[in-house]
Length: 93
Image (tube, rainbow, N blue to C red):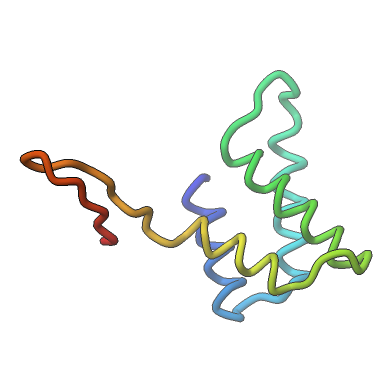
């Protein structure tokens, strides 16, 4: 399911689904995830953050741009840091 929520986020960013559709999908998935209250998965944590941002948008405390910025960080490749032969590098794949 983890890749499915990333696909949903990609659909939102690309404009295939709107904020209300994103909210409904996340609410349904969180309902399922919260059936086991003793476990907090990475998926549940990320979706809970998005759920909070959506509520704050609807209440006028945040903008959709802030949600888009947050969701983009979830799907963009992470930079690779390292050291080769004593030289530090930062590679963006």
